[in-house]
Length: 193
Image (cartoon, rainbow, N blue to C red; front, side):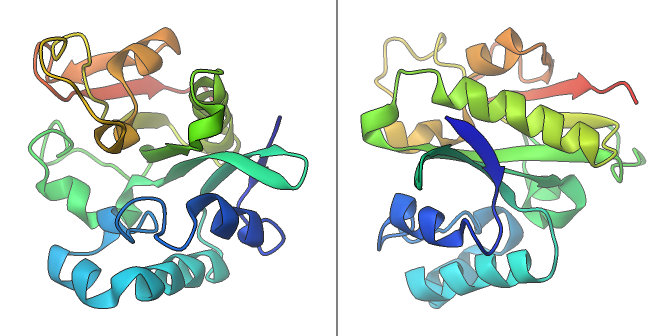
């Protein structure tokens, strides 16, 4: 598999990967930059067009794991400042309200096609997201994963794993900076320039 940035050429592959429902419940990976009311009012078609408009504006949106012409996985990675919902999240809010977040990028979503799961696609996507953020001048990159180790007694559905897992991020060198011992964590990797 090769990683490719989402652009006009790879957009059709994303549409095929997400299918008519936009990956999960018509979100189209727009949850982090709009409110619940807007997300619901837009519906799947509207959310798809919002993501496409972000792409058309030149904003970095994410990467696809491509197997020929078919996308097998997706990771949303972009500057943190483009995700207003993160500022309100108990897990993802900045460590310090005065912290300058302009140099921080965020990995907010993963989607791996069911036929490609457990094959290392999420790790490939995360490594690519780190490289992508670094190439674009990021000082650090964050994620907001689920701690599956804490939840062994309670089954976690694949729909809840779109954040990735703590184990995935820590294996890639990220450190837990908030939420250790909780269901979700804020993890961060400082990037050398």
